[in-house]
Image (cartoon, rainbow, N blue to C red; front, top):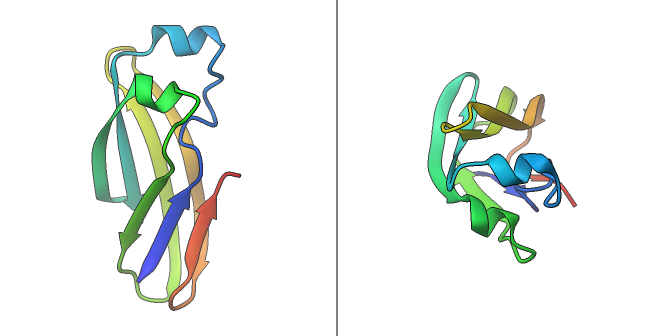
Amino acid sequence: MTQAIVADLSEPIDRTSYISTVLGPQLRLTLQVDDQVVFRDIVDTADLLSANSTPFYYEHELAPGQYQLCLTLEDDSTDIIFVLVDEPVSLEAGQILRYGH
């Protein structure tokens, strides 16, 4: 089992910037492994941008090996896409991937 942990999904969004004022009420969170969607959920923008935003935890079974991981937040109302992670990873058994602070 491999675990992915992102400490703060709102990290790429400056809470005081203009961009945070034009986002729709919900964002779509998508995790892809080798271009295959393995997780998709809706995140409330207000919760995401609050000072107490909750870390994102996700577990997905992957055999040890090389993968391309892509984690995005998308706002369908503005066509804005935040790419949180898009990188190749080499996984070992039981490894936990941590992103952010």
